[in-house]
Image 1 (cartoon, rainbow, N blue to C red):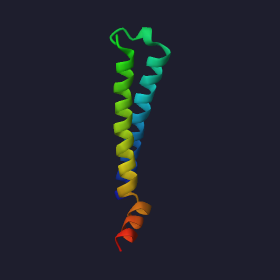
Image 2: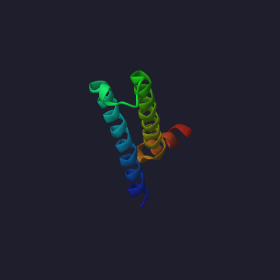
Image 3: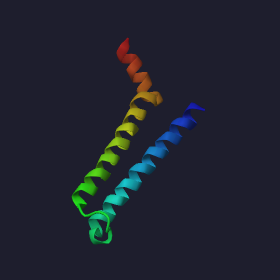
Length: 78
């Protein structure tokens, strides 16, 4: 069950990263097509913030909840 939940969370986070990267690509390739965003740079920065947030969560998941990382942290504590 643990592995299923970790894999589901990894997929969830990776999906959000992909979504926000796609949004950035749209902003970079067709900025005039996004009428509600008058400040394209600010919109890109917001999207990058989302990517960074989900990427950090993905790294924390790997660092603290994958078997290899748990074994290494236990070895360091000994």
